[in-house]
Length: 378
Image (cartoon, rainbow, N blue to C red):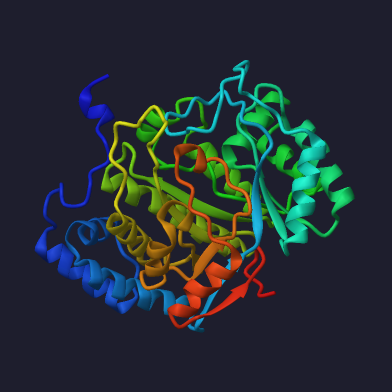
């Protein structure tokens, strides 16, 4: 494999200067609140002043969410297994099947975690595993049915498109049939995990065992057509280029356009987060800075003009950058994350309880409000 094929992400500042005329057009387009083209977005990334970009993104945030409210959700991330055949080079959490540290979460432990979440005021769980060699759709549906029997009011925000693709193949199902079975068993919405960068060149390098771009998008399109709400993510800062980040945003924006026309399910929010290289096969890479995170967040707010909400990623950035994110396009602080394992496995262990999330929002002049997955205030 050639060195160019595995080049690290281009850090801000180590890139060509923006074309002045394209940058001027992009700034005017963003100021008017009009739709950016990919070329204009790239020019903003390359040449826009950070504070100017933040100002434009905040104005876009106010167009979508004019009330002085910042939302958050109380839930926990539950990983049903760490055994995974994907072999993602960016993941410090997984263990290959048969590894002495590979473990499936016993059902009684899973139910205890759910009960604790509800006792702490939670309304949902984000439940995921990996690409387990033996756990398919049917086994997952049985787990969901048991959860719903014990906790009928709980919202299950579950799986990810790569998990659905993998599990459906294990059980010989189509993706549509797999989603129908999961919904009947209690799946309420789908998180946007496994997206990384929706460009197959990058996916082949960092996640060779995971589904490609089109299957990821197909799962979300089928979910939306069935009325399911989902979220979307982007993990940036590994081996992608700035243009590939924008290609990722373009694919999400295009699918959101299609889903909104159908008038059923759609993406409720977008969550960009920076790759954490420690303890991974890509630990030679440099972690993206807080400034780079804020640039990505602001650009995402401007480009994804058909997304209502943008979440700040305090789990990778910590409290101060998360607070600044509220001035760079974010209107939501995401989850209290009573439990989180995947990012923590890379050595990042920020923890923000509900009271701290409220304090961060109020210090920026906002009212902090708990919400559910559908952004209904509680």
